[in-house]
Length: 201
Image (cartoon, rainbow, N blue to C red; front, side, top):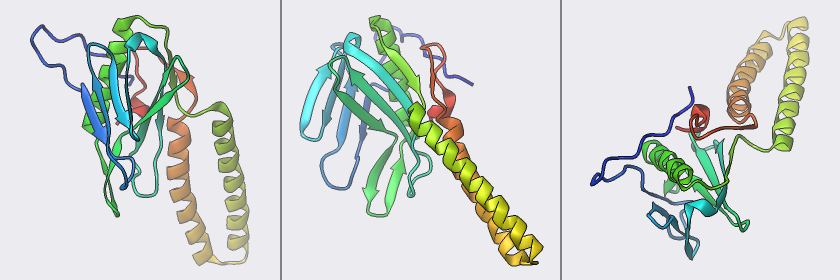
């Protein structure tokens, strides 16, 4: 189900999700974000700034798994001057560990939408990946399905049941990974009242 934005907290209460930190790589400093009264404050790759919420032109949410972390989400925030900032739901801990930060990422992204909504700016809310990339993914999924079906039919016809079982297992794994990516990342627009639940941890 879509995620609704919370109401403003009562006076004197500290709002959750106002700060988020992650490491995009093992080398370099962490990326830091904070939602302040003046706007979204950020520090990344040796640069920093504060973007007033009314100057945010677009927010794109997507699902971006990688080999080391299947639960990886991404938010791209674009300023009206064309500059863009990426926020990831995972953080590098060691060479072999990319840790999920599901709760903190979700709280920050939901709170960011609330602040932008309350600022009343003209912002595009986009879910999923670009249309061309999505179409390419669908085409690749279809071609792989056709190829596996042909190989499976040949394996059964020649009584290569071991090969057939391997193909079935490969098809199930590929369909689960690639199919999930395609399903979550279908291009769409959304509203402040209904954030896409499939694109948030």
